[in-house]
Structures are given as C-alpha cells and as structure tokens.
Amino acid sequence: MTQPQEGPGHAAGMADTRPLLSARGITAGYGRTTVLRDVSLSLDAGATVAVLGANGAGKTTLLRTLSGALRAASGTIELDGVDVTAAAPHRRARAGLCSIPDGRGVFRNLDVRDNLRLAVPPWSPSGSWDAALAAFPDLRGRLDQRAGSLSGGQQQMLALARAFVAEPKLVLVDEVSMGLAPRLVDELFEALASLAAAGCALVIVEQFVQRALALAPHVLLLDHGEVVYSGSASDVDEQQLLGAYLGAELTA
Ligand SMILES: Nc1ncnc2c1ncn2[C@@H]1O[C@H](COP(=O)(O)OP(=O)(O)OP(=O)(O)O)[C@@H](O)[C@H]1O
Image (cartoon, rainbow, N blue to C red; front, side, top):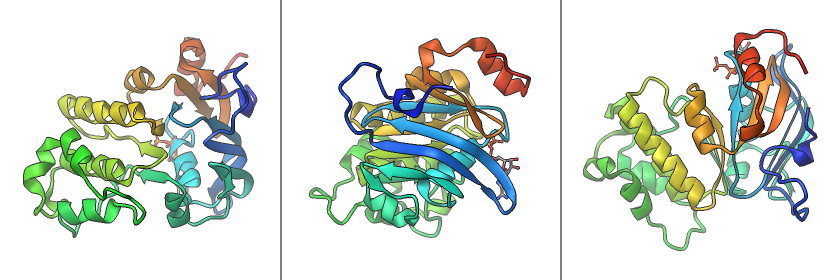
C-alpha cells in the first residue's frame, strides 16, 4: 500500500506543500463493528480522487467519517492544516468541506431558493448563486418549488448547486448517479468537472467506475475496509480493481 504522503493528489517529487485533506490511520465503524481499518488518504487542493471498491467495502463510511457524520474510533483528520478529527460536521463545513450524501442532501421542505440561500456561507462576499444556476439552468424556473417535490435528478442537481454556492475547498460526493438516467448523470458529472476546474477538490464515490475514473486522476481502492491501492488512476491494476469488486483474494 502506498504511504499517505505519496497517495492520491500528491505528486511524488513535488515540493512538499501541505495537503488540503490529510486523513491518517482511520479506523471507524458502527457500534462494535469495525468497517474501516487504518485508512489513510491525502489530497492536495484542487485534486480529485475516486474512492472505489465493492458493495460494503466502506466507501460511504469513509465519506461519513470525513464529513463528521461518523466519529473515527482512531486516526486523525486534518483539513487545510486544522485537526478536525473531533469536529462536528458544521465546523468542518466552516473549514471548507461540503458533503453531498447519497440521500441527496437537500432540505426537502424548503423551496429551491431557500435551499440555495442557506448554502451561502456567511463570509461569502458575493452571496450569489448565478454560477449554480448557470450550471443547472433547469433549476432557474423552479426557485419557488419545494425541493421535496422535485424529481430525483433535480434534487441531485440542487444538492450540487448548493455546493457551487457554498464555494467549498473540498466536496465529498456519494453516488451522485444513483437511480438517474444517463443524460442526467452526464449533466451532473459536467457540473462536478466544472467544480474541479474551479479549483475545488473532490472525493467521489461512484458506482460507474469508468465515469469516476474519467474525472479523477487519483484512486483509493478499498477492500473490506482496507486500502489496497492508493495512487494514480492511470497506474491502477485492472486485475486488482476487478479483484476488489469481486471480493476476490488480491495478489500484490
Ligand atoms: N448504519 C450502519 N450500521 C451498521 N452497519 C453499517 C451501517 N452502515 C453501513 N454499515 C455496514 O458497514 C459496511 C460498509 O458499508 P458502506 O456503506 O460504507 O460500504 P460501501 O462501500 O459504501 O457500499 P455500497 O457501495 O453498497 O454503498 C457494510 O458491511 C455495511 O453493512
């Protein structure tokens, strides 16, 4: 396994600048069940990593631990140099983290306008959501519509639009394509690409591996809660990838 400082988003040989996200030795789970074991992930500002692995490998658990929805049993998480291991989700959000969970992450009882308004950070100079509506013009005519009455795809657009408005340094995206038609998934991935192009770092969990790899130059491959590959997407061994997805024994 690659050491964290050589992992995703960290080009070997480059000047050693502080990573935006540094998670080291994370162990986490639910009650007495340990899911993640000694997971490390380091990501530079503006870098994108795809977290891959079979069902139950621990991908969502990793995102939940990074967002603060789940407390790590051991290990440390630093965001932009600040230790947020014990910080509540709202404190991580203030530090620049935005989480888009697979349950969409919108306020279903509020209309689209209020969903966007609440995503504006208090310190934002512009307080504008023009970029969000430019990325998702479909939402423009729905500002007064209750989020809960939007289609699944529109809710996912709104969740991503909120990320645009929040101007985060890091966005955690869990299964953005879940249950959506390919055309909508294209649109959502274009929006993710423009977030990345704007300098936002992304940690992506995605069932469509090829889509994730098209966006992410870096891969963290989990198998039964352990990192079995961490590094460049172009170097990932297809057999190893397949092995992790099939839950088969992996060769070194
Ligand atoms: N709230 C929970 N309580 C107890 N166990 C859980 C809970 N959530 C997940 N698990 C278990 O933790 C393990 C990892 O689940 P997780 O959702 O992180 O995997 P995943 O890689 O995201 O899988 P999938 O692709 O199916 O979403 C699984 O065995 C799952 O059953």
